[in-house]
Image (cartoon, rainbow, N blue to C red; front, side):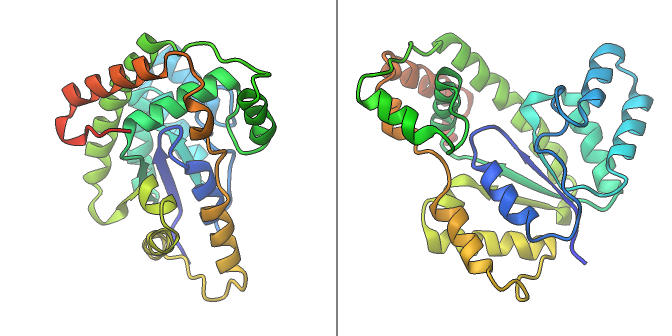
Length: 257
């Protein structure tokens, strides 16, 4: 019997692809991705907190939501810090394991997010046609909202620190995974996913097409947004502003994207 789990992440970290792969190998029930977003299946919990800020009610609602141990992919920057904190507490009590998925290239992550907002392309489906039209000059892109992108980078920096600090308190129920270690190199990605599955207690020895599933996830993921990034009119300005702010917030994490 494997463990139920929450994949704690942010947008544009490859979380949808990784979650789909691992969920398909687990015996636990699944639920809509990012279920605590207000418009989704457990969204009433986030709405109730926003309106009432009743801690007892929040705890009870999360206990009810996790009662059947559904597998959860959770973008923690999209809900209130108090909801994140209580979710971590309840999930730990219910025997969940916590997977923290992030991307080392924070500038690249924010740029990818801003591009998705501009183009409406959030996944691989439809990206080929739309990106081809952009490269052919049939579609033009507006400039990024640089100030908004910087605000979001700073916001995510704070939320990330809060979530990591809380999850690291769970000791042996906590595991970190990074986008670059999963998707940059296939052999490294296979080893990274293997360690994750071991942590979750998932045995793939009886899954006949596991290698095919893994290969499909690691080699065919995403929409390759980098191919059109330079078509954004103010890409250099936005990239520089993000890099400068990241360096100020966390000098050791700053890197050229």
